[in-house]
Image (cartoon, rainbow, N blue to C red):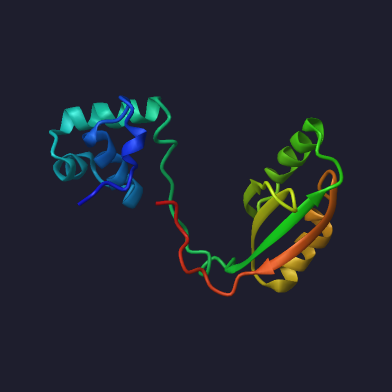
Length: 160
């Protein structure tokens, strides 16, 4: 099976065992180290050392639970295009800092295009989204205007 972690990442930093470890952990971050070692073809101690090194070097940022938004009543997803009134570095920094404080904003991407940012917002329903848009997102620093796209279905929603 070919590794999902790009061979280009190698450049001397990652060998095939490192890439196998990253692939396995991307699929199941709760793998016990003994099972991880078995899957990648290493013994337990060298596998543990590699995982620790991959964490220390920033290839593994952490481990988290993937929650079910539907069961948590947060299955409404909308994407908001945001155009700022000011795009100086100071304005961008202010907007970025404010976005990080809004729990409903699941993702924020600066975009090269006809608008400045694309936000992924998760709420309980369209009413809750409208309230967040009107009271919170529109009030973020330097927001000039927004345009909303409502997701009808998530076809694929994972990093790897």
